[in-house]
Length: 63
Image (cartoon, rainbow, N blue to C red):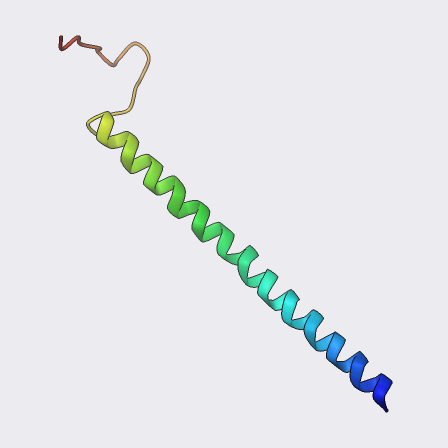
């Protein structure tokens, strides 16, 4: 009797850990997208919303 209770507890702990890990893995995608969006907003701020295109973009010197 004592052995089966220990086995059931172990299975419950393993299931709990798997659920928590699954939640973190699924949230990874959303966190990655949020990070990339923030990096893009920062880059757009420095580039005044324009992207560099070779041969098209004019570089001016504001010294």
